[in-house]
Length: 256
Image (cartoon, rainbow, N blue to C red):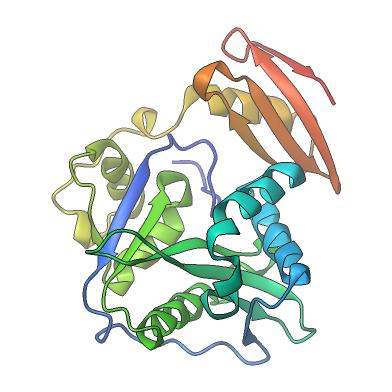
């Protein structure tokens, strides 16, 4: 199997839902030296949230990231000072983030959302301290159960959630869990079969990535093809580019 990025666009997209019913038994992981936690305070931190998620490849368009932030957080923006946490490096730069969002689900009244570590800081053992911190925040806010949504593309984060004790919830949607089982071989997924490599990757996205690799050395991108869209957004060399694909990505044209 090819070496996978932390956020791997070429994996077929499936939503993965998990739950944690016992917050007290989770292990606490301290931050490495010279890092610290900080809550969201103002619009400057909104910019940090956008920059972190752009770096991971979840968004390849600044406009798209900004719109997503506004639409997602608009209903509880005033609560971010106690629900959105960052990790700062020794220079005070925010390089990781997660949010504990309120939920209308009475069984799971809070949700971990937008968990991300900046691309340049991945591998510095920040993910587990960040996850244990957001669970600590949940306990301080009086929650005793947590729901989270992730996806197959964020396979490494999904593995970490399982390590922490989260359990698969949407198990009837087997395709995504089969993919995660094949990639991670996690013991919590022993009831799901491993599948072939051909079933893991999206041929359309693989073709698009190969095309972009012939143009850019280092880049992040997103592809939108639901509801008859055919858009590709690319972030490379501190610039943003847009493409359209046609004929199952046999033809790709730059538009901006």
